Length: 113
Image (tube, rainbow, N blue to C red; front, top):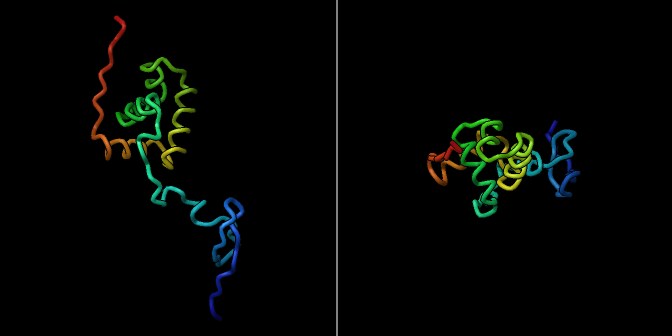
């Protein structure tokens, strides 16, 4: 019996694609990070770049928040925005993205003492 691709329409973007089964979401919508989406650092605000640099230093949300005088929940929201802008899945991918473009970060923290 020959294998037949069934014509489908993605429920997210409307793109037509072939599917072997019951899939209703195309590969582009399922795995946007696989696309060659330009991951331009210009898309990030200066605050988001600061957060990306601190994440690249392997800091957690709490320490990033303390260094930048932000609540931990605000850091989490900034990270979500960064992930969407750069089409990255998580903080590890963000750290790798930062290292590829700028090298290892060297953040100097000035204490208030």
